Length: 158
Image (cartoon, rainbow, N blue to C red; front, side):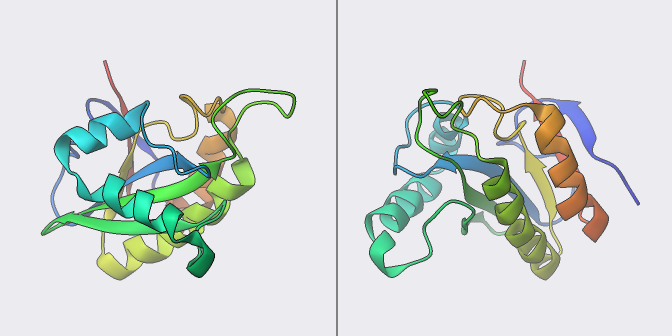
């Protein structure tokens, strides 16, 4: 079994050859305006437009915690909008991250990566504005992606 590769760099400019799938965590409110999503929007308009439409039309689709939406942004490049945080603020119910939702979404990511023959690239998902701990997220990635043979690169942005 392989392991997660950690690099310094920008997850919106994934390294390596072949099909790549960039994974990030979204909230369940339809909000897109802080954190990693800004870097995505600077490169491509499609992930934000797709996410906002997905949320707006949620009565008729699968938008919910744990869902994953796959948006093609280039011939060999996809973005996975995964819903892994409840709301956007820390409050009486703790931080917004929902580890179970990230776990569920990563199962869908593993299936899509397998279908595409893609490697997965991401920042430390769920650990920025969502308030999560990497010590809780990393084992989910190992269980869902690494154990399925999906190569994963995690980017720490300088």
